[in-house]
Length: 255
Length: 198
Ligand SMILES: [Zn+2]
Ligand SMILES: [Zn+2]
Image (cartoon, rainbow over all chains, first blue to last red; front, top):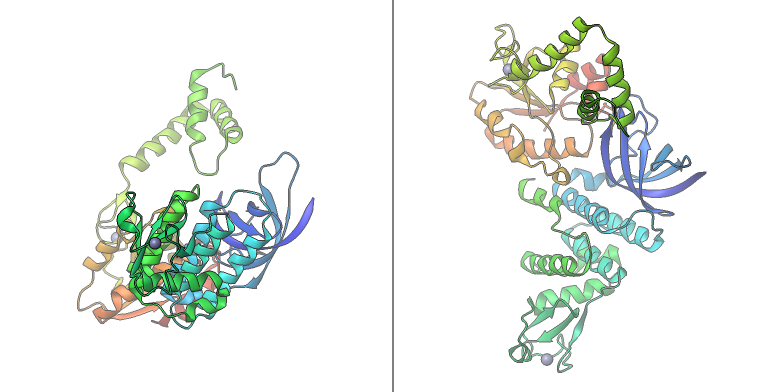
């Protein structure tokens, strides 16, 4: 069986003397691992198309009873060159593919997920400021896509529209229910949630509805970004199997 | 699989721990060893022991060596004002084959890769910083042309730039995704020649 598909490279690992085992998020088959023979040799037909974050068009085939797909051709569709050259974008791009690698299962076709990933990498590539918003929006859209969409717009107890109500100064997110309690209702609730400032909440709600390429333009300061990141990572670890702190983000501290 | 000899089973087990060797290949290797003359097996096993007992890391450049400092660090003819930073000992061998470079090396022991849990503290970065002094003129960064190598170049250039010496990286002529150790001498010479300041 020979098939071609578009794919984003998630990981590339050395295999034997000159080969690589490459994990792809493909449009037609979801997450798959392919063997790229000779991919580390100086002269090889794959070129730079197997570098992490690259969007490539690949031709793969599978021998019967073999675990691994074999890669026969691969060409770059989009290298996301600017993302690779800027420290902050690089760390964020690597975090995006790390997340997909962690939470998506092998061989489950999911075109919507492929599009979401591709959109995020494009948005990152063109972002002129606040590239970090792309990661936050991607995480939010990912949990929604996996079926754990949080509902943040009104208080789950009194129904207050938390963003419009001036008396609400902050909210608590209740992880298990994916809902929020307004600052007035928190006192009557025994299980504490995760505190989110109103500014961060406003940005989060706007990320949910904004197209990916616009999220970097949404105003938010770095404190708000960190609040949202902490919330989303905790939320994801609560609901999504495989989720953990994204190691790639450690690059933000050293690059 | 049911083995009829515990020694063979143990050898297969040991071989299959090596990178890129599966159970089938391990068994083939073990049976091959069984057929080898006794003297050759003895010299093979001595080589294995020696590599662990005699080989160490050079206290200056962190390359593998039997004498500390290594033959490159202790060679008075080498240019002591230039250090070329590489990921692995293999890369030193590849660059030496070009006969183009006469400076010293520094072997990091890998590249930054958060996914593999390799951070700056896992590389010989402290050791590199300890070698920097006023007489040093240039540091050449010669990482593999892949995302981990790029990340490492970015990290080191930010770290070293404030220290005043020239920082350069080998030219981008090397095929991206390939390993530096597999580049032919001509390509590697050109990459070294065409290095650009950071
Ligand atoms: Zn309320
Ligand atoms: Zn040395």
